[in-house]
Structures are given as structure tokens and as C-alpha cells.
Length: 261
Ligand code: PGA
Image (cartoon, rainbow, N blue to C red; front, side, top):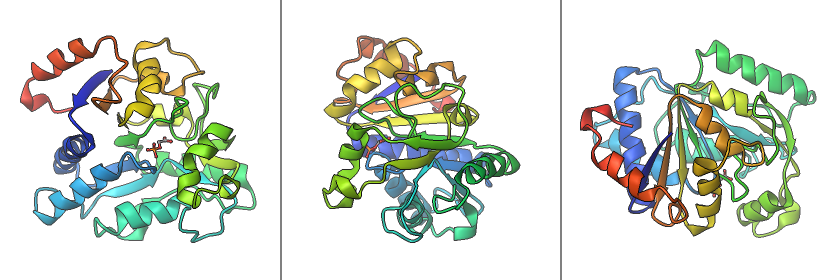
């Protein structure tokens, strides 16, 4: 995998947004897999800026969701459908019809999970999947020891993830659902390009395990080592435990510009 160390979250957002603009120029109906959480927000802001300045055309872009809480009522402001509509679909001026996601309110949740995997395949597969990383190494909501071959399914959140996400629920961990639907690790690995973003010291250990540790289900993000086109964009703080940081800096500095990410 390629590791790119950027000065800060804003620079990471701009780099990834420029990559998306290039992808959209090559493939206007790109299916972009978006992640929620705080980390990717600078990407969405930078992409909206490129759209405003005419440097990115998202008029035919399609968006798909990585994961979703189970049990929140439809339209709950912290359901990931609501978050993606608010943070990505509306600022980019996309139609909600251009956006697909799993139904966390379905009566038959296993059927909803299968239907989502089918919908992704029928849409032609994800062109670029954005990912954050949990402090426990999760991608999507694939918590430690998730099957590396998993497909979209129901998962139970660890207490650590629920505590990490309590900030979105007024700091009250009791409001954070226990269950989620998440693209499986196998589903994520089907994307043509995977871009994982991490910022802040709190992610440094998870990033080091994912990039330099063994491929192991105990660190789900390490599965990206098996992907032919995985990019990890980290700020200085999130890169602080990487033993090969110097090598990553040199290789990126020497990379021909035309190659992009
Ligand atoms: P964060 O979440 O970007 O809000 O830190 C990342 C994740 O849990 O995958």
C-alpha cells in the first residue's frame, strides 16, 4: 500500500479531493464510497470547493454508504444516511437518487444486507472507497476479529467504538446503538481503489498496526495490505508510530506527478 504523509487534515482533504476530481474527469459516473465520522469531512469540504470553482464535475457522480446504525428511526440526524445527505450529497448538489445505502430500519436485516451487496454489484462496483480507521483498527464497522472475507452484514459495536462515537450523541454513550450494518471487509476490498484517511495522535497506533503489522483480523484495516490499490493518507500525528515514515516520505516526494494517488 502507498502511505502519504501530509502536514495536516486540511492538506489531506485537498489531496484526496483532487484525486476524486481526476477520477471524475476520467469516469464522470464514478461510484464513490463515502465514510462518515470526523476524518473525511475535510475531503467533502475540499471537493465542494472544487465543484464551486469548476475544477470538479460531480453532475453524474454516484455515492454509496459504507455502514449504518441499526435501530435509529428513519431521518434521525445521526443515522449515517442523514449524515451523508447533510455532509456530502447536499453540499455537492447531488440528487438523493444518486445515493445508495443499506437500510438500517429494515424488518429483515439479513435480507437488507444481501440486497445492499447486490445493489453495489449492480451499480458496477465501487470506484473509490474512502475509509476512516477506528482507534481499534476497524474499517467501516468491521470490529477486531471480523472475517477478512466478510460481506455486508450486521455487527455488534465494541464498547470502545460506542464510547468514541458518543460525541455525536451529545456525549451520552447510552444513545449509541449497539448494532450496525457494515460493508464487509471482502466487500470493501472489491472497490477498485481504497483510500484510508487518518488524522491525530489517537490513530497512530492503529495506523502502525494496519500498515506495518501483520495481516490479521485483529486489526481489520491490515486487510488493505491485500488490496492492489490501497492508499493511506495520514497527517504527521497519525504517522508518528510508523517505523518506515522516512521511506514513505521519500517515495512520495519522488513520485512522478502524473501518477496521482
Ligand atoms: P472518525 O471515525 O473519523 O470519527 O475518527 C473513524 C472510524 O470510526 O472509522
